[in-house]
Length: 299
Length: 197
Image 1 (cartoon, rainbow over the protein chains, first blue to last red):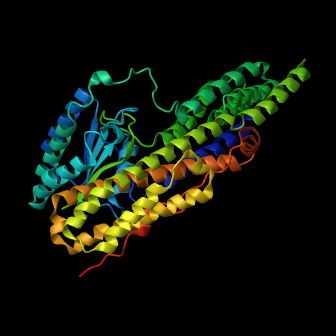
Image 2 (spheres, chains in turn cyan, red; image 1 turned 90 degrees about the vertical axis):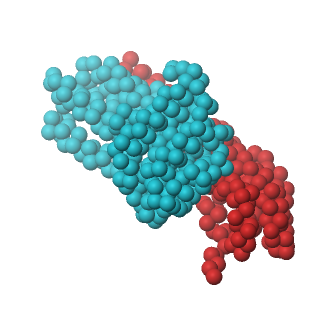
Image 3 (cartoon, each protein chain N blue to C red; image 1 turned 90 degrees about the horizontal axis):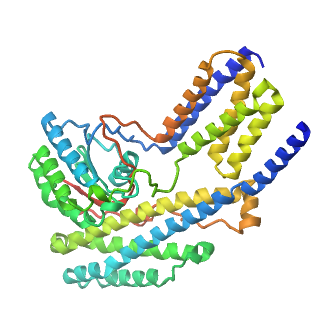
């Protein structure tokens, strides 16, 4: 295969990978998408002043530093026909509020047009921030203030009450060591990376001398290793990497490693597609999960 | 030497494909579905536990709504009367019966809550409102648990049916397809129609 063919091959793969990422997202999407997690207080309906947002964010951050619980607030103009429970669950699990394994996250979601709100509670907080207590907070703290027109006051009182209800349940010392994986194990992305590394090394070693048979054996070897570990994603990645490496080596004898960087760029695009969203503002979810606990209300 | 190496590698490749093909994955998914099923059972049980209090509270205000009250009590007895074991997942008929019983209970509960529309005092009663919140919370958890079970079972069943993992499933592990819920959200279907005056 000559240089032109190799370039055409690489160019052809990019749209395929982009399409794959898009299709994955499309199948996950509800009519209303999950907003990006730009901070602990995401006010897309602009009912809070900058001062309010800063104060609430500081309060929530202090709480996290003390207890490792991750509580966030999302205010949206409209649910656009979605029911609030599935949407709130979707947001909470996408943002992954709460620490992995502890699942100590909570979300206060307010939909202005529909006049509906919900407190979504992670598995780990259900013991203290029970469904009943969430309902009481909504009923006694938030709704009366919303009804009288004091939106910022309602949000502040709600956050106050939520934090007070769960205060002190999880202490920083109870966090698992950063090295420990109490979760279900390496993520899909990690398997892909393992596969890439294995494939790359195998392809390199067996491509010595640039002989076709050796490179093909390299591909088979990486396939084999991944298969034995039963990591389907890893094996696909390993196979693709080894074969690509073979092609690259064939096409670009003696040229720079710039082409190697292209391969990595594609995989990081795919990896980005799997991570499920981008996190800005220094705040990101800790990997917590939600079982549907909490309470809804309206004003 | 090259030919021998190739033969060995291809041979090992074939063996590992047949053996490695889905062996661990199937076991993993099997465990995942069992865990997801346990969660579904837990939430249904939690719902059943709320009902006696709920019935008692409604009775306090609407004693003569005998039909609805008795309907809930009976439906609950029927649902909790079904022995739920992991074996249920291996028996599609028993699974179906379980699903029906829970769906009936959902309907009966819907009618019970709807009674409150006619009894403003009941509707305003703190205890009733509390129980209603707890019931709503539990229904939501049931929905989440069901969805997760449905997703897990779909993954598992795909692996059991697709080639070549179906060979591993059938001959090595003796794993069969697992039953799935036929209605994704039984609450939406069971909701009694809104009555407006």
